[in-house]
Amino acid sequence: MSSLESGDVATLFQFTGAALSIGLSTLGTALATGSLGSQIIDSSSDDKSSTYEILPGSNTRTSPAYGSMKKMVVVVMAGFLAIYGLIMAILITQSNDISIAAGVAKFSAGLAVGGACLASGYGMSRLKLSPNQTAHTATVLIMIFLESLGIYGLIIGLILNSNADIEDFVRGQDTPISP
Image (cartoon, rainbow, N blue to C red; front, side, top):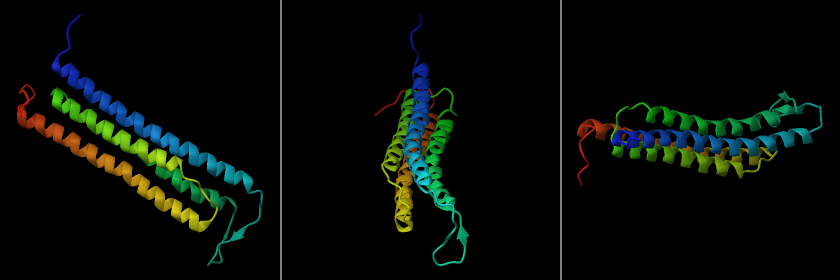
């Protein structure tokens, strides 16, 4: 049995960061989609009317399913969180033969994106959808602010990942880190 080399440990950190990025962001998406999707299904099953409605301020007639379809926007927004994690994981795994410092930086990048997307998804899962148009607008605005948490995590992850690649290039892979 051979001992671990520094490249093996760095690769372990690198791929653990990628796994955390995908896993935690997908968990956040699942929380939000499960909660909001079940609310949409519950609200559409409560609406037994088959008449068409006239939208306020226009002469356009819409079916009762229109209310459920516009609520799908929040589910689509929740799905973007998983995409942020996937983007970060792809960027993290692009480098080969990295130093331990770069591996830890890539681990941190994955954790930042995954954690931010998980927190964002948890916040989205706590929202309650309303059939009221004004309340729906407020819900979408809250979703936008919660989505920005995932975007901020992605930006932090991109900064950490790019700094790890730059430091490895400047120092060389085998040069020890000095204070």
